[in-house]
Length: 454
Ligand SMILES: Cc1ncc(COP(=O)(O)O)c(C=O)c1O
Image (tube, rainbow, N blue to C red; front, side):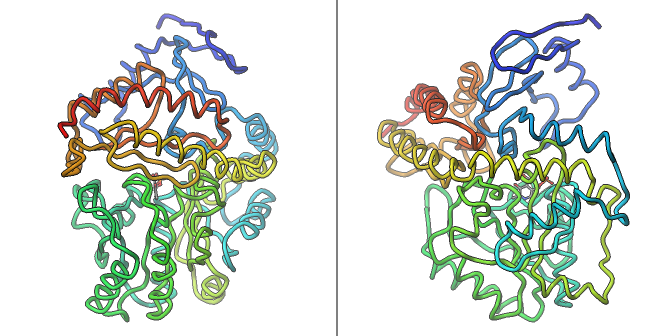
């Protein structure tokens, strides 16, 4: 293979690629499978290096990472503090099996106990979010002796056997029938055309589902406190509090899936903090290490952890509490604190909200904008009157494809899904950088505005 060198573009990190972007794409497509896609249509961006809110192709084309990759690189790319912590740990102790006790594991448990809501202070470490949810199900079933799990339709909880069954969105369909005992219920949000239900109404429907299923059969209810890929759905005030009350009233454990919404994304360490709700179990991944290395965790309240004092915890993973991952998480959490990134997400998030409102005022294809902290989405419509989405549920359209192409040409990377696109930059973003991204979005929306008839 022809060696190819690239050090063009700005940023401090220099990298040498031995393959061109084209060679990388060709070989990855030939020899590896891409997720959730028919392989003939995938069109990956070759990535050689990254720094801060930017990443570069081997040829030096710069992209602003407006989705923090997969809503996970919360601290931004190339943070030396995390890189060095991983290097130090690698040189000292790369791996110890999960029956051992290591310092990074000890320190991370302590640190998470300090950060997690309420009396959640015991953690089981996994390789990612899906496994965190798998173990949350196990813990809930073991602690309650019940088997059913309630989950919402507009949700994503991971791709492993149990987690994909919890998932409510169309990624579940191919995995059905899945895990027995999972029951889905509706959210307060019913799509761009029907809009929102208020909290009392949504809670009344949930209570009906609980009654119909038999509360004594339900081990847990899992939800994303602020739903991620299914629409950055910020619940109406009173909703999460009401879910908490219903769970407590019926002995159902509340699992908050904070895999995407945790670690500053919403302008709080965890999204549940906005409503002062303490779940019984909390799952996390992504921002825990900012994806520098894989790590997930399920945290539990003290009384649930007590259950396993005499009873066996039937769960295990070779890479549970991996020292490199724990060291990376400690350095990531320290970086959030040192740079005040959670506060930055709140402060810049307020600016983002005004920029999004401005888009809605100026572009007729903007049907709705939603955000909390630096967790945002813009939903596009074909008609302001009927609010018909610009692409159907679980589908796409020529206009959405054209918008995605425009963003890519302009060096703005974000996720374009169905009739919407996301605004989820790293939490270290500055206001000028944010405005630069919104200037590109503003021009892109001229494409989608042309599709609006009224
Ligand atoms: C809310 C939520 N839960 C769980 C997961 C699954 O995490 P992982 O891909 O690390 O298994 C995701 C991934 O996007 C997620 O957004």
